[in-house]
Amino acid sequence: MTVRFGLLGAGRIGKVHAKAVSGNADAVLVAVADAFPAAADAIANAYGCEVRTIEAIESATDIDAVVICTPTDTHADLIERFARAGKAIFCEKPIDLDVGRVRDCMKVVAETNGKLMVGFNRRFDPHFMAVRQAIDEGRIGTVEMVTITSRDPGAPPVDYIKRSGGIFRDMTIHDFDMARFLLGEEPVAVTAHAAVLVDPEIGKAGDYDSVSVILETASGRQAVISNSRRATYGYDQRIEVHGSKGMVAAENQRAVSIEIANADGYTRPPLHDFFMTRYTEAYANEIASFISAIEKGTAITPSGADGLAALALADAAVKSVKEKRQISLRA
Image 1: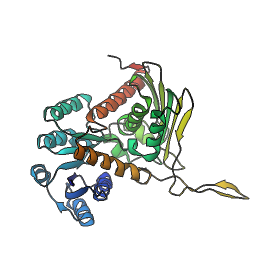
Image 2 (image 1 turned 90 degrees about the vertical axis):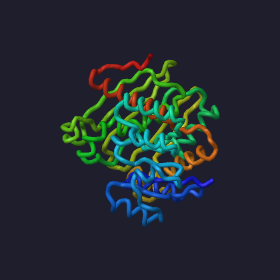
Image 3 (image 1 turned 60 degrees about the vertical axis):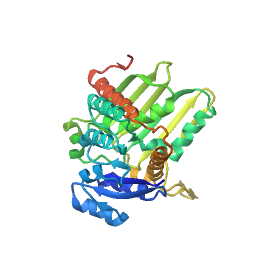
C-alpha cells in the first residue's frame, strides 16, 4: 500500500515533512496547499506534486492522509475537518494553545474514529529511542530520575514569541513529552522557575527565555528540565536517565563525530546548529511510524492524548511560575 499525502503548509517545517514523505518508499506526496503561492510552488517543483486548495485536498479521493504544518491557531479546526473527511492526520504540535479547545477537538476525532498523530519528533530520534530501549530492557533497573537539557542556539524573533504561546508551550512542551516518554509514570506535580536572561524584549513580550522545571510522579520519580533560548556553542540536546541499577545517557550530536588531539589539546567539531539538522532522522522516522500505523491499522503514537498531556504540563508550569509554588495535577 502506498499512502497518498496532502501537505497543509509549505513553510520551514512543511519543507521538512515534504522531504520525509517524499523520501519514504511507502508514500507519495500528491498535493500541497499554502496561503502563499510561491511557497507552495517551491515544494511542488521540488517534489513533483500538485498545488491545491485546502478544500480540494479535503474532498480529494486520491489523498489518504494529511500533514498539518499551518499556524498553531488553525490546527484544531483542520484536524476536525479532516477527521470528518476520513483522512488520517499528522499534526505538528501543539493541537492548540488552549486545553479546553484541545479536548473539544479530541472529541471530534473520537466521534469520527479518526486517526491522529501529534508531531513530537524527538521520540523518534535514534539516540533517544536507544535510551528508551535500554530502559525497557531493564539495563538500568527501575527509573528514578530523568534529566533533560534543551537549549536553542539563539532566540526566535520577538514577533514569533508573541504568538508562540510562551516558552513552556512552544519549547518545553517537547521536553514534557520526552519526560513522559522516559519516566514510565505520569507526572502528578510541577514546579517551575523562569527568568529573562537572554533578551529583555522577550520579557517585554510577556515571556521568558530561561526556565527550569521539576516534574514528580506519584511514586517519587523525578524529571528535571533545563531550557534556554541561548547556547553559544550550538544546539544543546542531552538526556540522562538514572535508575536503580545504573544510568543511560544520550549525548549531544555533531554533524561529524571525530576528535582531534594535538599540542593545543583535544578538539571536536561543533554541535548541530538547529533542529532541522539535529533531528533529520527523527522526522523521517516519525513519518515512517505514521505510515506504518496507517498501513497496519495499529495504534498511532504520539496520539492526541499525548499532545493534551504535554499541554497540561505546560499550563501547570506557567501557573507555577506565576504563583511561585508547586502545582498538583492529581485528580
